[in-house]
Image (cartoon, rainbow, N blue to C red; front, side):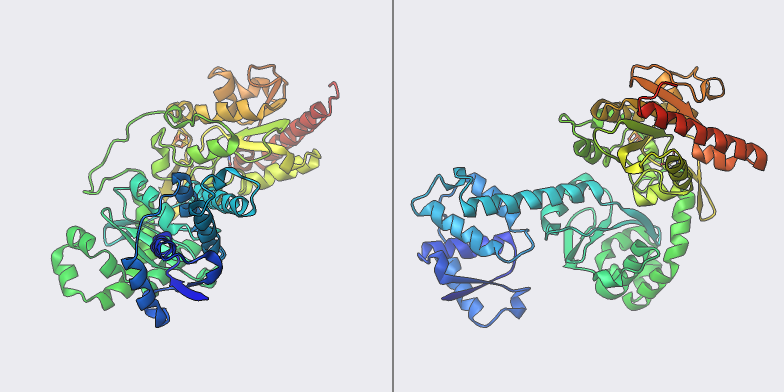
Length: 482
Ligand code: URA
Ligand code: SF4
């Protein structure tokens, strides 16, 4: 048995596998052992590796195998290495069409692995959300993500491409990667246990910068560029770091204050081109595909300041669709609609009407949080009609896919989006209106508006209307004629 130590990534496996193949070593003669880094490898490794590298010949294998193997090499379990070699061996030893036999155990396993990694990579591309921080005037974006597989190097080039002008870092439990606008730098992972409950990102950021990755070293060229030289030159790294960490919360606040205007790298105010969500709609439309595409929408300038896109949520063939106005502060952070105070009130009303929330598709007319910074708080700001129009393609696509029997518009924004600007909630609240969007549409009070009514008596009556309307909706859903 030959022990082969490899650094667990595709390139190292590939070099070793080619050499082993050239040396005629069959799969059953090899024991693949993962080594974290060259320094930690056992002594035998170096000589083996060298001889393999020297014997390197390129075995002709189908491109499809290389693509699948590239993905499967990110699979979290070490059984991927012997599997990959077994398939490679068989492909080059009398079974060139092996990949077409999808019922073959090895092929099936390889396909499952690559599929699982592909799905995980999609998820990471769609759901990583960056937090903006400022470090001495340098804008940094940081994100925390927990992928199922070891996909950081696989996905990092995508982020480098998509967010090329930003300085960003993605932390995962297995690895971290930073982009300084020019190159990717990989580092160790961040233990989940270091993630405290309250504000994980910020804390992780602190821990990360303090103990794992030296920010001054990481951003030395950025700091040279962005900070007055007299400061950075005279500051040794060691004193700079605690200082940065100490000031982090303050900088977040400053960042929030500045959030109303978008600035480019040089600090100039940059006008955001007005487009529409249409430019971002995917060709193939399923809810997950829409969600993924909406995650990177820049159809209006609201994406600049919000944390992330808050897409609709619920079963893909729900009978009932609820449409709010736009995510609030908590929704923006959680990435889910109606999870804050409005969501609580909505849950109560749904419960009172006996409508299970998990049977309802819940979304918003606008998918990004619009706010005005007030101190460290972010106060809801009403989306403009241009923003509502820009975002409308997402809503239309959601309705088209879900095909609800009944749509409930929560508040005037949603109702006017679907019924036109002349619609008056005060006139038609609680009425079942036929519409082009669904067999029935009803508009009712927005829970956030109810919560904002200053007079307690009027608030109670608005709440009562809301509860009554949802009961009507429940009856209608049961097919009861009202
Ligand atoms: N208000 C909305 O309109 N939508 C949400 O998701 C939360 C509050
Ligand atoms: Fe796109 Fe809508 Fe967000 Fe504007 S608000 S960026 S249109 S998803």
